Length: 198
Length: 103
Image 1 (cartoon, one colour):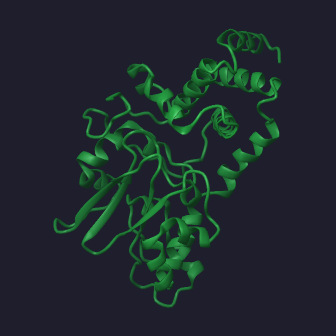
Image 2 (spheres, rainbow over the protein chains, first blue to last red; image 1 turned 45 degrees about the vertical axis):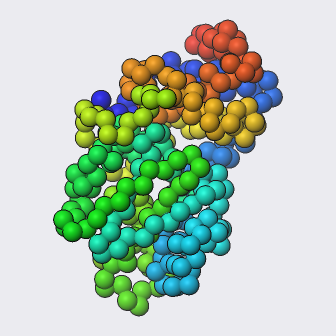
Image 3 (cartoon, rainbow over the protein chains, first blue to last red; image 1 turned 90 degrees about the vertical axis):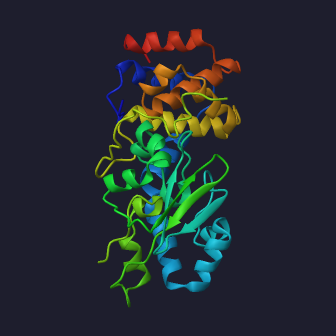
């Protein structure tokens, strides 16, 4: 039942073409505006945004406090806001608490900071098991947690989006904010990875 | 209401299967569906709850055997038809015309 992106019947591609052609003809859709929005989410918005937020929180305790207090406002300070990020809650990983995000019902995800979600996040296996066997899922992602580390799973909704603030790895003293941001991966902000030491 | 979309805790879905260096979109039609959704949603043709409900109303077998952007196509098409923005007949006709190489 695992669905990656099995090649669709050519009918699907044709159906989409027909829909776009019809909507353009009716003046409801502008193909250029479509190109623009696609380009934005394919090339401009993505996890590098979230990584900047994380790095800022690591180097600036005041910013971190604001981020955990009001994620939406603190993230907007760095210029990231908008659709699917209107209400953001940032949750902090700690030595004894590991956080994991899921959207069991669909695909809710913080677009302004992480971009569009990967296929596995939207697919049935992850949505089914993240809540019933989070440690097992984490192990498959290469994250093995000690028994005394609590796992908290956060189920996103259409109204509320979460982002994980991962732990800053050791051996990073003296690194610049930009260097730190380069260490932060998408999966670390979902909770399916930790940030590796450089 | 429970539906097939309520997957939390469900058994038998198999392993999580992350793809390395996954692209944002895998097919050109996925790009276009994404853009069409943003455009029609932004144009006020439906709200986010209607959008999700259109997916949640899918036949369960169809839901589980289709990819994510096929779900999007399904709900955008369903909602635009239900609201009378387009008709299924004209969409089918346009598809048939395109299949024959028309534009």
